[in-house]
Amino acid sequence: MTSQVLPVLLVGCALSGLAIGSFLNVVVYRVPAGLSVARPRSACPGCGQAIEPRDNIPVLSWLLLRGRCRGCREPISLRYPALEALTAVLFLAAAFRFGWSPTLPAVMVFFAGLVALAAVDVERYLLPKKIVYPTGAMVGAILVIATAVQGQWSRLAVAAACGGVAFGLFFALNYANPAWLGFGDVRLAAVIGVMLGWLGVAYVLLAFLIANLAGIVVMGALMGAGKAGRKTKMPYGVFLAAGAVLAVFGGAAFGHLLHPGA
Image (tube, rainbow, N blue to C red):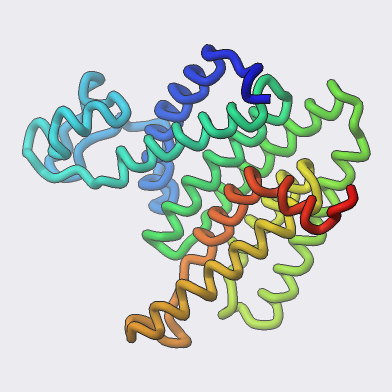
């Protein structure tokens, strides 16, 4: 359906991704610290000077400032433009994938939540419920609206069932041994189950397959290099997020592999 996607949709999604990516940087920094994401204005962590609007243009300002604060010349983390660019790329890819579809807003919200959660997990080994819950609530609300518009109630039922099963399986693993994965992973698994269940059961299976394979490969590589042991913490939320994103774009092909005659 990419041939039917209008340029205005692509440009709009890309620009929205840059703007939302900028906001996600605030979320990643403030939510784990228990701070408000609304106030005060963003400021340089080095000198405390409020960031001027001209220095708050996603990606571009960081490049023009050469990655340093205008006032104190303190280095600005590469994470800021990276999250902005990543969110823009994901939104643009989603626009190509879904076009003018009621599913597109849900996927964009889903991707934004995954980007924020993965970034926090990398830095703090944490998946805050103050990010997981709003993401899940917004995704769920959009899917309910999409269902009401399209009348595909069975599709919503499958999404809810996938979310419930994912939550149940991950809850059992957490209950058996919390050292295997935290409860944040349990919550995130449920959100992934709902969003990808809306697209199809094969999408859910592929997401968790990729997440676990990636985790095994990365952990094995680190252990082989002597940089990790059996008790080394791993940001499993990053693998869940990566698996979910890849499944959004590869789930249909995976479904054909599972059911070649379908």
